[in-house]
Amino acid sequence: MIVYIKPYNNYQISVSISKGFSNPVLNAIRNIPGRWWNKEEKIWLIPNRNKILNLLLKNLYETEEFNAEEIKEYKNDYPNIQESNEQKINYQIKKMNEALKVRHYSEHTIIRYLKWTKDFLNLNIENLNNLNEIKINEYLKKLALEKHVSASTQNQALAALLFYFRFIQNTPVTELGSVVHAKKKTRIPVVFSRDEVIRVIENLNGTKKLIAKILYGTGMRLNEALSLRILDVDFDQNEIIVRHGKGDKDRHVMLPQKIIPELKIHIDNVRKIHEKDLKDGWGKASLPEALKGKYQSGSKEFKWQWLFPQKNRWKNQTTKEEGRWHIDESLMQRAVKQAIIEAGINKNASCHTFRHTFATHLLENGYDIRTIQELLGHSDVSTTMIYTHVLNKGVCGVISPLDRF
Image (tube, rainbow, N blue to C red):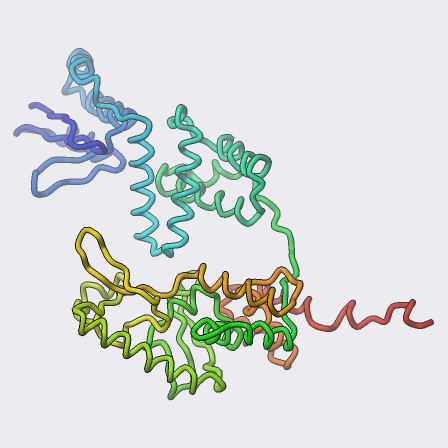
């Protein structure tokens, strides 16, 4: 019996067995973490890592069907079956990307988690085989003291590393109990007055003005509003469906009655843009992953088009294919910042301030906190409770002793 162990690619090693193999030898391969069976080539594929290779050789030796000299001879014949540190990191990031997608994490979260993990691994590139909670704490300390990141950013980096250790390194969670969690400070959100909302919106024009009205009128996050498709607006039910919101949750919000005429005109203009794109031979919109294979022709249907498409079509320089994405967030953010300045408002406000203002004004109008929680899509009512602090009550309702004179 012969076990053939050969380099397969930059990330994997192939393992195959000649006829007459025994169950102990087969189990020696099956007990390797990350191994899988390639049916087409009839070989086992295992991660191309020294640690994994040594475990395989150890398992084979313990079957007592190979002697120490054969194992030693193999290691001498193949000294190059080891990957560079850069290859190790790339392989780890590839595995983490797959693990995040399997668990349906949002694209934004995947990008951030991969960024923090890759940064952490690069920082410990010379010590990749000895990563533990001490290294995590050192990295978090570096973020806080040298890069001066916020507590929420630091905790996001921690969440990424905990995911990496749990699902990629298979390190028991109990061993990570001593990592440092940054204490997130409670900040009262910036809120517009009703007059300020009007002034900001009036300093915007065209599509951006309509988007601002939707942000304030529904409490959506900016990326949720820009990700709306034509089919998400239901005029009959007077509602808008927010799909794949934070936490990959869908929810329903009201359709403000005041914007219905303006929104219908906007949709007619989007239809004309789409018809021109179709006439030019394009007109495809990017479909959600689950629908790409199911509705291959659906990408050209008007209902799947973005409610707020970008002005110009993008062009793939390789395939020459053209299409449209929705308006970029940065364009709306810059427009709102400029509108706030022109309105003469001296607050550290942004697009997200419309969402804070939506919740606060609903509370002022007497709506209960649970209804507002559902409209905002908060998982925990404690998150929504922050808006009770900005109502014109509490300390603001107390008369100062100075005013008694």
